[in-house]
Amino acid sequence: MTSPHGREPLTIAQIAERAGVSVATVSKVVNGRTDVAPRTRALVEGVIRRHGYRRQKKAADPAALLELVFHEVNSVYPFSVFEGVHRVAREHRLGVVLSELQGRHTPGRGWVEDVLARRPIGVIAVFSGLTDEQSGQLRTRGIPFVLVDPSGEPGHDSPSVGANNWNGGLAATRHLLQLGHRRVAVITGPEHALSSRARLDGYRAAMDMAGVPVDPELVRVGDFRIGSGRERAGELLRLPDPPTAVFACNDALALGAYQAADDAGLRVPDDLSVVGFDDLDPARWTIPPLTTIRHPLTEMAAAAAAMVVSLSRGESLPRNRVELATELVVRGSTAPPRGA
Image 1 (spheres, rainbow, N blue to C red):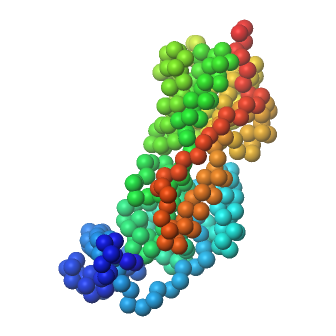
Image 2: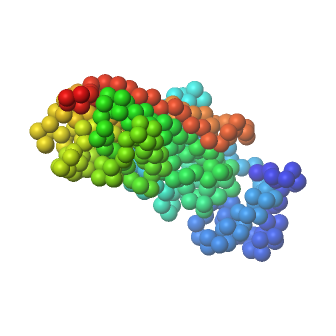
């Protein structure tokens, strides 16, 4: 690692002197060991960020690997993401290592140590993020990372790739309004998810532009799973004045809305129009096929992989945040409301 100020980087002994710790402690930090107090680690990493670190011997070359991290793999999302990463990896003769966070949105203890042991050229984290400590450990070892559709707001120093979720929410809702629907409900994902909040904001903007007040009863919070979509859509359909259309903030929620309509003896789209968000393969196989917003996951993953490769070569990125366009895909699950 070179000095950020162009000066000669420090040796381990010089870093130890400036940080007021032992040489052994600095060695543990630069080698990714966990048996260092967080405060001490932050102190040492601060000195390294300011002055750089001169290794005493040539570091081992990184392995020809990309590390791909999912918060969970029990869905169809990973296949679309892996396709994009694999496309770039194949071009650069790289292997891909998959790891899963078992539903967590930040890696647990031991994750960084496993990554450092594998020595990939870089890390791609999907729908998740890294703690400040984990980010610092990777940066200290010169391992770049890029976030794909992070659940929270990425830091300014963290490269990320996302989609225009606000425009997607706007397009989905506007499509339903243009068909003549006025009782338009929305089922969101978790409130902590950045994408979920942006899609809801797009829905609200479309309703406002059309001069249609948002009924708070028609706004329901789900968890991006089919069961949640079925429950929330069922609640909506039991209202005294139920919606004639539902914008579900992902395809899984939309499939749950299909089930809720069937439970209530209703037909899609004759009695209830449904729009999803993702355009994963099952959207084309539902009966009727699902109108949805195309979420360019494969392209997002490929962009993130290309960014990691560039960073691993010491190249600067044109910009830290890349945002790709979403697109409305109209199929058979939407129609004008009855009597329109």
